[in-house]
Amino acid sequence: MKLTKTSVEKLEAADKRYNQFDDELRGFAVRVGTSGDKAFYYVYRAGKLIHLHFFFGGCDWYAAEFDGEDLFFGFAVLNDDMQNAEWGYFALSELKDISIHGLEIDHDLYWEPTPAKEIERIKDWL
Image 1 (cartoon, rainbow, N blue to C red):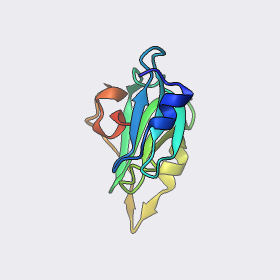
Image 2: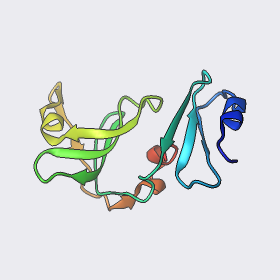
Image 3: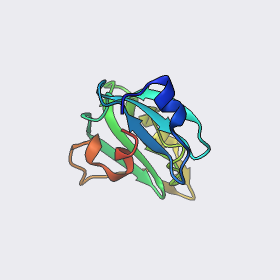
């Protein structure tokens, strides 16, 4: 589907949020929320490699980029809330500071660099 004003206006809400990609402009899409809200975005992250994975309970932080000091760029899911999961920046120092009843964020030691599009929790966001 070519994303035009008319075609986007015809997109309807569904039980689950979904993405509609433009057939001509690769990476250009509109995300349709469960309430029918719409947001345009451009996907340039599908080919990104996720180099590190941190986790705690229902929370996951997937790191794609690192500034060499403290700041990561990647994908975060907090408390299994996929509605509000997002790409953005997070600091290693902040992850290290999290301690709940003595439990701390874990670094997945067995993680292998993986394209974002192959990670179950991320692929619907691409």
